Amino acid sequence: MSRFPLWLRAAALAVYAFLYVPLAVVVLFSFNDSQLNAEWVGFTTRWYGRLLHDEDMLRAAGNSLLIALVSSSVATLLGAMAGLAMHRYKPRWLPLLVLTPVAMPEILLGVSLLLFFRQVLDLTLGLVSILIAHVTFSIGFVAVIARARLAGMDESIFEAARDLGATPWATFRRITLPLILPALLAGFLMAFTLSIDDFVITFFVAGVGVNTLPLQIYSMIKVAVTPEVNALSTLLTALTLTLIILASRIAPDLLKARA
Image (tube, rainbow, N blue to C red; front, side, top):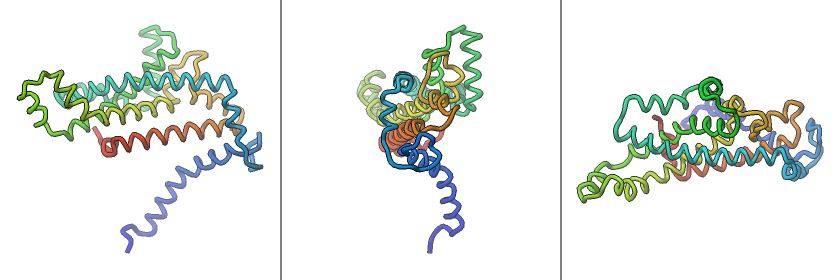
């Protein structure tokens, strides 16, 4: 006898269909040989070839990759430091500061950063403002993963290192860092995925003439959802799923952790 009743399995199937059938339709119509994209005409891959010759698209892709690489690298460094501090020293205020951007609604965070950049810092919006914004909301995710990894480690390892005369830096370099490295790699991939897919916060803090892939897609669908948009969305979906699967393989238990 099945552990789950029939109605529960049917409800789960309906939820998964609601989530993934639209993605399947986007992927399918990215191969549709029709400019109107209203009905299926035939199979083609020319929309993917057109993306490679679209200068605006290539520029937006370059901006997205640059922002994602830099912001996820900085967020991994700062998130690792925050995770270590929360685990070792347990300050009351640090978890609030680190995790608030994670729990805050994106539109509220985007508006707050916009006001901070323009009214407090008088910063010209552009790549720098986007980088700072992406680092801000990515640090919390890396810190949670690093802290979860540290919480599952045996403290006697560090005590043994200190008893053997290891300095704090030597203990970190030879013991702590190798043990938490899978968690940091998973955090980096998670931050990269969040950065390259972000639209709401980027929309508020991007300057005039600075485009990322999500912003480029938004500007393209104002007229109509063309097969070229479907092709770009398919590539972004594939990249996102690949990074999430890779992160889950590197640290399968840590991505389930909660602060």
